[in-house]
Length: 313
Image 1: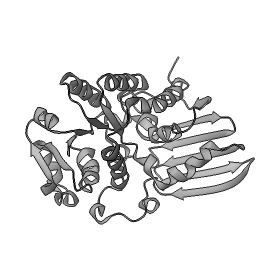
Image 2: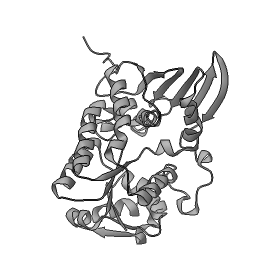
Image 3: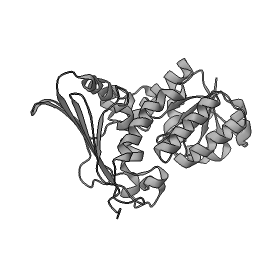
């Protein structure tokens, strides 16, 4: 089975290691990405597993599955191109699916009409804690869950003025980071009430806080991607003011939650083991129907609609 990678950033240092762990997969990518692989010592060992081609059309036509690790707007346009070429198979898309929920819904409609299946890189949903605490989301008795995620994102640490800061491009605390948690929350029954902190500005959105409520369950999420102190990821579960369980890590992708890394992933990006699980499911099931992601888009849109711009008149 042939899987193509489109994207020389996270496509190479994230998705490539996850794919290498599947021995029956032939990995294909573009020749121009070879240098990115060779520049990173931990990735050079994978070079012999990769077939490099010069032509994008050749890559597309030769692969049954395509990993598209591009900016949200580029990802949208690339899917449109695939459909225009009559390509059939399964696409693995990055989060967010598009710069905003409306475009993401259009993307699902395009894929559905073209009979193309899909998977999405919601790696955080594959963690051990996501499964463990997911059971609380179906609680019958009143329960409050608080998720607190604070870290210093790469673009803030290095003062990069790139799209990952900008909500209009699909960046920012909600659309690029906390979107993982939106996907996690969307796996249960629909939520009924929504609150969200104002958006700072469309050019830079470092932090967000939102709350969703359903029956007796209330979940409060805080995400600060420009946190200059010790990084922290914590979940606190309480009932009637009494704390029931507290779970805390430096990072939600802490490998200790996933167990020991397999030898093939030693020294790789810590998200690779979770991407590996997404790949495994895709290869086994052929991907998901686009409509399977509608619940995620609805919740994302509901949170966005109550997020009033702070700079609005």
